[in-house]
Image 1 (cartoon, rainbow over the protein chains, first blue to last red):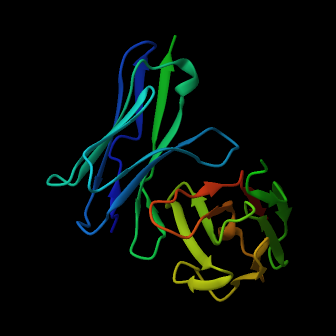
Image 2 (cartoon, rainbow over the protein chains, first blue to last red):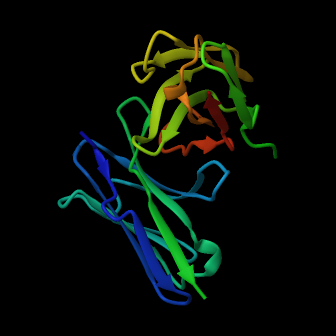
Length: 111
Length: 114
């Protein structure tokens, strides 16, 4: 049973518009969440994270929102750029420091 | 700064052969993780070490898989004997042991077992 779910396998967005990637989790004990970006033939690259004591964290064009009551987080990218085209993974930290990943959402930003 | 270094980047071998994947974590990091990525299961944790000690190997699929971390700057993941269903991309990641520390990944080893 998946503890971290990314229900949209793909998303297509026009350059300059907002990209919103969603993630749901089942374990209310998760206290730290991360987003990773992955290009083909490379490893995942850490993008942004959020602790469960916050509901928003912003870093430049990237903002992560956390809704604990809904067990939902989202990553907003604005404005989207063609270089943002990649697979985005949501992850939650388990009780022993391990990461539990969603299956990813492939974002395509069209010029 | 050097990131996590994995070798080889690609490995093609015949079933039944022993396969050894290598990882050099980021200097100073004291947690190391091995993951496997497949189309069916996504990114799944195989095993991880804190201060060179294996903490949780429950993700290791079978006894054919073993991992070691003889020192803080080197780890291996071994498959013996290898089978076609082991074909996947294997990632190593490292981090500081501590609260709210992200893991940093290597570029992976693409393993193909014929």
